[in-house]
Length: 219
Image 1 (cartoon, helix red, strand yellow):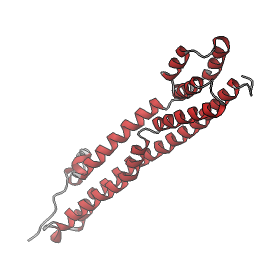
Image 2 (image 1 turned 120 degrees about the vertical axis):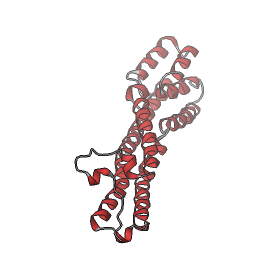
Image 3 (image 1 turned 90 degrees about the vertical axis):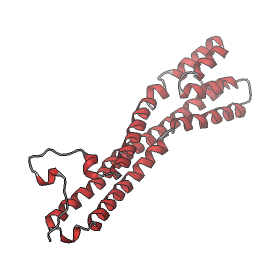
Image 4 (image 1 turned 180 degrees about the vertical axis):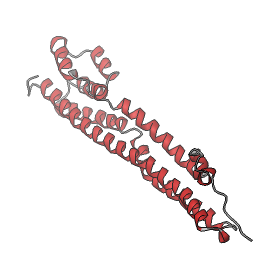
């Protein structure tokens, strides 16, 4: 008795268009689809949140020093900074403690700075997780497909071409896993580098604020 594995139509009919990728790769590809949705959502959100103009508004420190020099530290200025950018939150912490000793002012800035860094790092661990597990999910889908292929009762009598077609279908999951992992890792590294640069810039501007307010540096 001759038996064969039923293959997708696109492997049997050259004129058939490429089928839906979920249908081809099987149910494990749904896990990759979920991972890709999460990855894309995080990437879009971080692209908007980590814009330099939003985190480090140009000329903010100079404007703050000018307003403090002309009208002193006011509650309105502090509230305005707190509700603005991440850099504004750090500068506001310094202004709120400008009457206290230098060390106290620096401690307040550092405490606020740690909270700001946590906000800048938001969802990056999730994106890194997607980049790490996507290849594993692809490998899992491939293994499941191979098990189903060779575990089939029909596999014993299948011809080599049918087996090759079944293996190619199983390998779709590996390809999809890499397609999700590569851009996720690229954006994860890019965002991490961007956050590190922001932290250095905010630290420098906060130090300048402290030194100017305590008279050890000119604006």
